[in-house]
Each structure stands twice: as C-alpha cells, then as structure tokens.
Image (cartoon, rainbow, N blue to C red; front, side, top):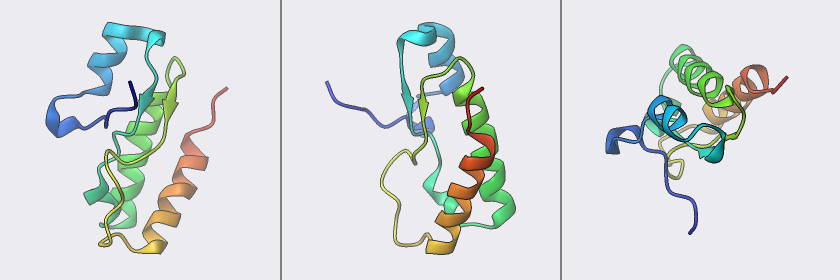
Length: 91
C-alpha cells in the first residue's frame, strides 16, 4: 500500500494517529496547502505547528496533504522550506 495523504479535513489528525500507532507509523504530509498561499506569518505557524508535532517520536516527512497548487507563489514555498529546515531537524 502506498502513502495516503495526511489530510486533517478528512479526519486524519497527527496527534490521534501518533497516540494510536506510536512509532509504528510514518506520518507524511499534513501541511495545509492553502496556508502556503497566505502570509509568511501564517506559513511559519503552519510549518512550526505541524513539523514540530510530527517530529516528536520520529517518523515524519514534510509535505502538503496534496500537491502544491499554482496559487502558491514560489517564494512562499521557498519560505516554507526555510521554516522546515529551522523547525524540522531531529535531535
């Protein structure tokens, strides 16, 4: 079975999944692509909250919960990647 989008609006909550499966499940995604089209502050908040939560206990891979739409400016996505580098390192 391949990866399934970790989409909060479909009821897939990172905290619930982590509590239920612990380290037996790799979490992939959960970043709201709509937030990536917003302000730098909103992008930082989304990345900080999701990446920090996802890395607890290991097994998290950054990505939006679907593809990144054309409405996301390249500079916004670059900012998101900068925040991932800031908040995402393990250890």
